[in-house]
Length: 478
Image 1 (cartoon, rainbow, N blue to C red):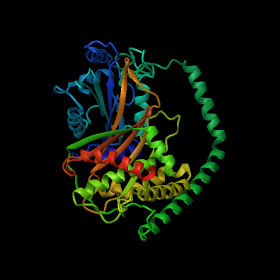
Image 2: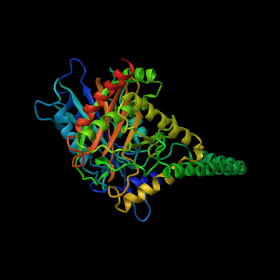
Image 3: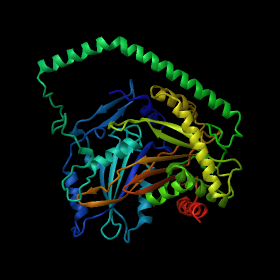
């Protein structure tokens, strides 16, 4: 199976200092009355299931043609991919953060399928955590969270659910990893293929006309957006508009090293929703306001706040609701974070105006042109990274802020409730911090992934985020 161009980018741009994997940290509480061996029993059960479903059964082969190589079950070392760890006593959030930061610093082994799952016990009161790391070439955030949502149970009484790597593995695979023969008789399969071919042949003219119309509309939309980007790039004084490569230099945008730091925050979704309603803005705008306030305070504290506003790249999913495939289906918009504005309420207004403008520009583009637009938008950035100029020239943006929808209701693992789902993301030269949010069961779980060497005491940004949310509430709801 060929590797799609968007997915291939993540493999080509990966460096030792920029591992291109994403991850999710799930903190869990065992069911009431669970045995002291609950985690050990879960590990033993999962280790007994050494069958592997897509994408946990494939590794990349880039030459002569980039393809995904599907491995047999007996070629995959489960003990390598699935690991059991324990925190030093007394385990807590600090010890968990240190371990997860270290795990997230190391790249995945390309000679093996590109994933790892760590089960970590010792959090106190029998609590444990799961850290799942998957290469970004296999899936984007939305695809990853949807897969995790399917792998976890919505029923607290369900037991014996297969682990995430084995979910659906029996389809099309034998126990020993050899392919399973098609169950459809060959004559029926041949008839089905002939009907499909005839249908496609008869509909070819209509599809050609439709394709030409879509291409024309997409081309027109791309020209309009390109013209808009150029105009605003040469007229940066417009405070509501953000375009690529007009971001100010800051400590967020130098060259990075491999070690990572990870910090978390979580807020009630209802709390943020109420604030967004009072302010007349979106939930995403409030989250950007929280990030803006936290970054403004952090950079002011180290004497590095730029006079011009920081800008953010915001990934936007273009994946259909029913799409359960992997790979990457995203595009991007840009917004100003108004870090040059002192008052929290005014700062939020400026952010909302910037995101409204960005969405209106993207909204003029037909869906058929989204891939072309995304490649056009990212080409200069990818070239910058490939040439080793990231962190040495004007950055495309100061930070990436992403919001990924997760399960609306609580999820369970053999009766253990998943308390929080925290995302971890990828960094590149020129981008030392990523902020990603997962909405899960009425909670907004925020993961701050940063370069340990570029951002001293990075965990303060997470603390300042909580202060920024309180400041917004005080300013808007006195």
